[in-house]
Image (cartoon, rainbow, N blue to C red):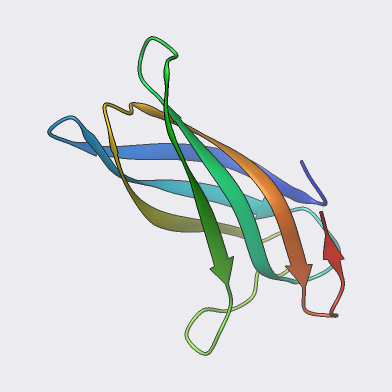
Length: 103
């Protein structure tokens, strides 16, 4: 896990040969509350050929609660990457409610 954030599962959603999006299930293993995450999603076909890359972000707000320590939470993102079957997530930044961050 990076900075106390563990990726538990990544699922893709395909429709007629296009990756419509993906769902990432995270676990906050840090003792601090997370209110923002940034990552890179790399997409590949079944043969391991690279098909594209997208940035993803999540932030808590008035409707979305921050991730408390030990929370599991899922985030869905749109993608629309042609011929992509698999997605691999690399977390690049995490922001905590105390104002600190981890890269």
